[in-house]
Amino acid sequence: MSGRRHRTLVVDEETVYGWTVRHRHGDGQPCREILTLHRDGLRTRIVFRDGEGRYSGGGGYGAHSGGVGDRLHHLNLHEPGVVRAFVDEAVRRGLLPLDGELNGWELFSAVALSRAAAATPEAPPGSPPGP
Image 1 (cartoon, rainbow, N blue to C red):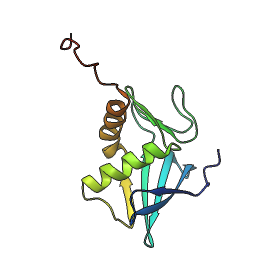
Image 2 (cartoon, rainbow, N blue to C red; image 1 turned 180 degrees about the vertical axis):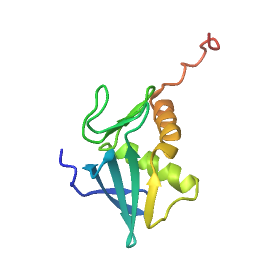
Image 3 (cartoon, helix red, strand yellow; image 1 turned 90 degrees about the vertical axis):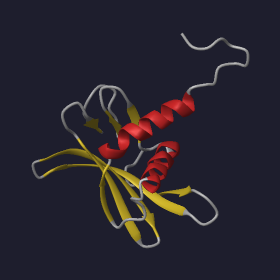
């Protein structure tokens, strides 16, 4: 999948974001994945730089274009549901709208946990409480 593919995320009737994902490196900088959101003339870049215990794109086990993760979680920035979760978390924290850059790792844990919770089925009715 091309890192330059422009996609659209519809949040509600009034809120629509354009978004792209790309991998960058060079100039002595660590590898980084960049999720760019476009809305109302503003460009917000959510940046994930490789670092201790963290990988982006080409680094780490199971890494791929758009892949970011740590020792516990992996997210694919090419998935619209993941992008929506980052938008929701940034809005919840009052970070959007923004014309600038955000550190994606500051949002990562909350987004990974919300995605895991959304994927976890509820216990069937009448089931005894947990372990």
